[in-house]
Amino acid sequence: MILATLVIGAIALFICFVYINNRTWQIIGTLLSIIVLCGSLFMITANDHSHFGMHKVTTTTTKQIYSASGSSANGVNMVLYQNIGTKGTENVQIYATKANQKKPGHTQADEFTTNTIKKASGNKATLKTSETRWEYKSHTAKVWFGIAKEDHKLTKRTNTFYLPSSWLHLSTSQAKKLQGQMAKMQTPQAKAQMKQQAEAYVKAKMQAAVAKDPKLATDQAAQAKLTKQYAAEFQSQLIKKAVASVK
Image (cartoon, rainbow, N blue to C red; front, side, top):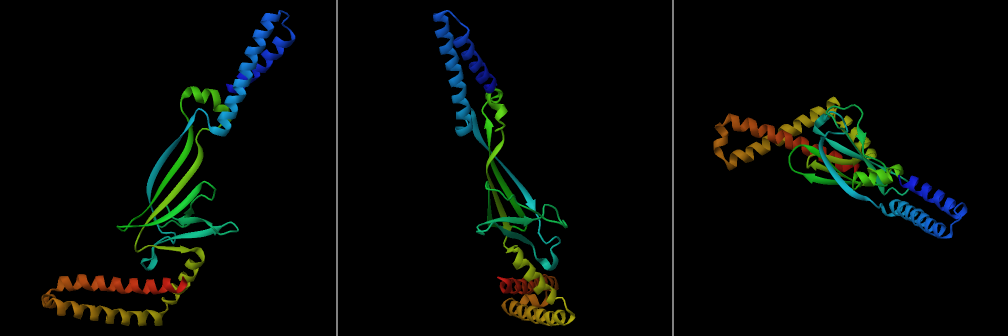
């Protein structure tokens, strides 16, 4: 609409200046045409540089995400990151949107997007995305400036990943090294050694628990629960050692 007004103003100015012979009406028509023409140019410029007739609207969505490694083999869940650009100051985060997803997705790689990692309680990882876009203040503003196609134009996007303490945040190169470390732990010899170490760890922890609470010596259900807990602790320590070796 604003372009049509601009064209009308330009044509009216030409007609008034060239074809109207009456001096009074020529001056009045020319002045009005100039006002319409300059007003249209001013509003076009204001819309282009200052988003005249528009305002920013922010929308926020939150969804559960899953490990970038697909199934959490060996209890390892992770979100990966890959540096982009020559400076290495920007990156994309790699994660899955569905459980056991074969090919993970990643965050947007553009100048509007910022990624943040935060620790969260619980055992579920979530992604909170906030997007700020320009939108027309009213239907009238959209009619006047809609041809510029500025509606819903993105100005800022913030991805905040909330990861449980058990989740890892590694670079893609670190993840490859960790995969190699975990593969070494799957050999028969390594498994046998880890089994012995796990049994010794659980036994020592159980003896300490019974010494602290003698009633546990006859409580089979409590012992089974503690055995499972101590075994998980041992596995967690192995994973932490493997992660520490690739950082």
